[in-house]
Amino acid sequence: MTSPIDPVDLASRLIACRSVTPATGEVFDVLEAALTPIGFTVHRFILGEAPDGPVENLFATRGSAGTHFGFAGHLDVVPAGEGWNGDPFIPEIRGGLLYGRGAVDMKGGIAAFAAAAAEVADHQGTLSFLITGDEEGPATYGTPKIMEWMKERDIRPDMILIGEPTSQDRLGDMAKIGRRGSVNMWITIPGTQGHVAYPHRADNPITKLGRVLTALDVLHLDDGNEIFQPSNLEVTDVETANPAGNVIPGNARARLNIRFNNEHKGVDLVELVRNTAEAAAPGTIVEAKISGEAFLTPPGPLYDIVTEAIRAETGVEVDLSTSGGTSDGRYLIQLCPVVDFGLPNATMHKLDEAVAVEDLKILQAIYARIIRAALG
Image (cartoon, rainbow, N blue to C red; front, top):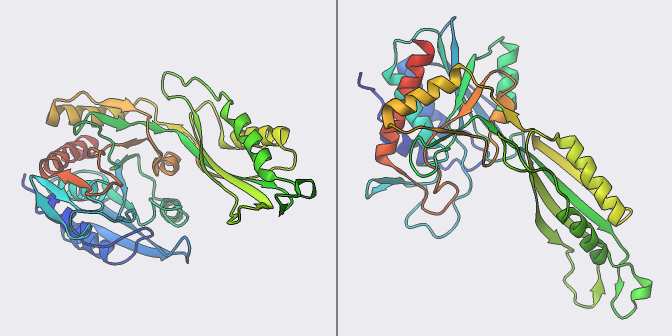
């Protein structure tokens, strides 16, 4: 069956919208205009204020009763940065590649699934899109708010596919069946400002911060397990905001992130860091924000549907992995089984982000096969 949606054309029109996170407006207009003619009822809502908002979300549905299969994704993108070979928001095809911010992460995936949904118009059950404008940001008004909106209306999918770019070296070589958790922490060491020539009248917090970071560096969190790679703690920033060379600063700060597997909970890691810091430098202040817990989708029908579709269209045996960063699956797993699968991710968040035109077409075919298998 031929799809009335060309995934390359739709991806190009989505890329042309400057939807730097948090996103609203035009990019959702483009997607709604593609979904409405193929039978979807589209709901859109905007929430929040700066700095985390406003954010637009979209829930589109077609069909009723029976199995409910959802596709989740995001239309917001990270800032383009300087140094592109062209305008990052003017899509351009060169050498078989479609260039533009969001081509891979993840406007291309959304376009491919929309084209697949147009191709498989005679499915049973319910097919839906759960699309946010705030996945690349704090997600304060993003996917969790879509879930609240669905709960108020007693809507609950049976399976969700997230179209994040999970493939590594070629399309279909990796899907994600779980993700590690993530927690950010901010460490502040109070001191007493003073002149460097009179150290006895000051209290240098930098020395104390050094002891804290050394103690954190030697922590052994775990060795990983058969499903997850080891947890890792990384210091991501150190600063004193001290422009003078002859002043002992009044405080010193550091920021760190822990990506953790299912052997830990975020609150326990926060407590571990607090205790370690307090032992190394009494009076240390630790603040934390848990972005998501580690999660895993157990083996089941969704595994089989995704694996068989990839094998049929590419001949590739997919690696079902939990590696890499987190995704909105950390929220959606509360509803039902979740698998992330999409385009090769080598250029996501990079200059000259690009997707192979042929990969968009093959991904459409994979997604169409998934819809047929899930909904008949």
